[in-house]
Image 1 (cartoon, helix red, strand yellow):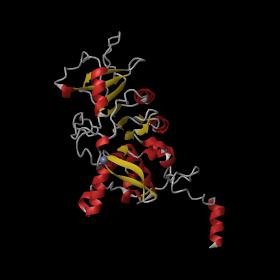
Image 2: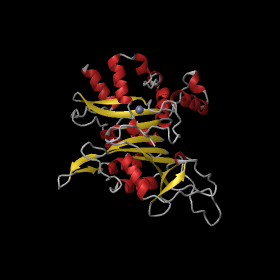
Image 3: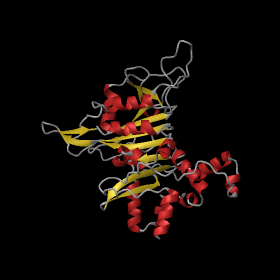
Image 4: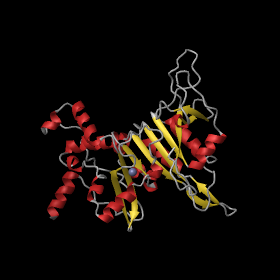
Length: 354
Ligand SMILES: [Zn+2]
């Protein structure tokens, strides 16, 4: 055995295992990693992989794409555990439906899944299974192509703050670079001010957004859901905090196709009452039919952000820019992101999901 160990050390260049990480900190990836995902395949494999890549890609997308996956890490029973499963929050609904789509703040998949485990509801648990592991483990090429599809052709939903704060230390960089659609929940921290009154703290939001900006280069769809309520007090602090300016800077720095931000209900209605301009239409837009035909749009077309009421006929994609350019081009999209009503707060016992 000693000879085998020496041979492995000499020929594979393996270094001694680093000291075990403390169980208090998340299981960070080692700073130096031996790549396990091959970049090319010289030898022909099974018949499936002799198909043109375009055909394989279509098959992968149909088999493993078009869903939302929860990816989280939680500290339970004095150990860190990964959680990965299908998100069933919106069922078969199209994610583009403005007033039917349920936001991440309302997600109950974790509780429902744990209930299925406790009660032995096997069909219920099956619905949460990603169902790709057998294929991924079948051969190295299946893993290489399949794992990329899982990250690039699905929406990745992250709720755990340790994962969001340490994204590049917990998920390999090539996987982060594959993500095209991402949704996350950011929970405000509650602190006491000097006068003893409760207050919200969102300082952790900036490094979270910086992680996404730095590592998710192919991100095209993004949804951020704020959770801020407390039973002690509900204050309109979010709109007065740097949260929206940070979002503005994030939006300007990314090349996104659509972005949504869910504000706690009372902040959303305050934004709609106090800061919004009257309903405005682009010349090519049809007038909105009733309150469900419009939504708040955080417009970043000029240096100073503004909030507009805009028709949702292009939702979740941006509405057209209101000031038609001098050259007559009316098809320029506005820069900015949609605002939506999210967390309902401690006083409201019903769900509005606007
Ligand atoms: Zn879910």
